[in-house]
Image 1 (spheres, rainbow over the protein chains, first blue to last red):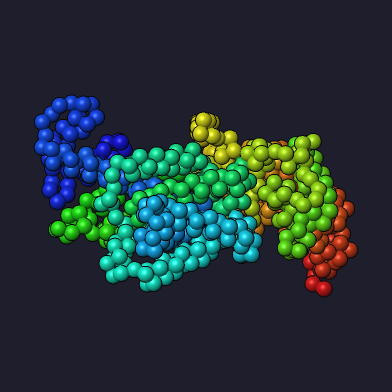
Image 2 (image 1 turned 60 degrees about the vertical axis):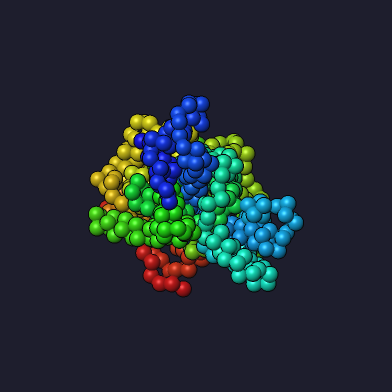
Length: 336
Length: 254
């Protein structure tokens, strides 16, 4: 069922755009490329489909799935419904890295924007983890709540620091044109995506799904907090380290490719909890699928909503996501 | 299974919460842990459950030091019911109890019908089967406590650690939980506030400012002198004319 939905979503993402391409043409191009079939297709169409839209749809799916899963994991482990993939300073760090490379010319042209963003994300995450460890026992609550509280507070501090750095670099040295470009990138942008990104994004997303499925019972065991998880045999520290570290890596990969796309990681997990419950055996695949489909859909809308202009995808995710989520909330409350 | 603690010390941020606590609970024994607020009962239970590693001293399961065991192996033997454990998740009662099977499951050893049967039996034991499909947040405090106990029973432990399990319960369920605990052929360590309930344990230990100051059968340990010194109350100890069991009547605080 879910592979079919995902396939249809990718096909839709490939077909719909400023010029809509019929399904037949897409299937022919796919057959030509994948199995060396020899259908006659328009070369421009073939180029758009294969080099531009298909890779873009796949990367959108990977990002959606990865970010949604990162949200699932952080909300489950930190026991905080407001946790999202960017909590750990990753998006702030990525922005700083991207800005440092593009505007202040760090790396003298040898570094790409993506590499800069990835380095920044890693740096920020590392800083947040160090800070969280140092803060460890000085925040209130029980042992588990302490660790979660420390991570959240450290994340806030780290994010603020890196956001300030970004703003500092932009105001100090960017032209208005550059600043606009950076703003656009920060809100999420899939237009530069090519097959190189699929090679990076697909393993990251699949890896994320596998880590989460492998640890699904551990994620469940955190239902009543870290101590309760430990009393049911979960080695809390290593498991939390693997899951948070893994999801941070997935998030950093996604953000460095397409920018900080908000909303998916925060709201898709909640929406899916309403629909399939909060047990991770179902929640993990459901969230990955929903995140993927949701981001492909948002990408399609971002291309066709304003004719002749591509909106930042972060704007679209929130514009359609917020009302959709409100609808789920209201309906679910009435049903009970 | 015998549970032994050898001169346990536990310090947090300069506060020494446990001081050289040693005790040994025999296989099948029900051991009550009593003491005023802040005397270290909960901390001791957490150390015994393997949730805190003691700075000095060690915990043994039969003759095996717990420090060398994996968390999962400990959880297959010991179940722990915390005083309060809450969640915001929308989970149903049977899902909460099913968590107790966690230490026996793995990605390669999935949920089976046996696990279903164990969960149902645990719900029957705490008289919650009729609420198996209720959502957690619609339960009362006492019902939640019974679900936690069912979750612990679903672990099918050899040793059950309970931290004031009867706190939120009405009198009927207090008695039925105590009855259930006594019936179990497990080693039980139970922290209690109700000293009359403590009378029903095989032995009790009295905690005072991080030390285990006395251990023995309830009749020997709970004396008017002890109630005065440790708990700070004047009390009368009476024998019930109906069954000669001992009752405490508390008169006034010092």
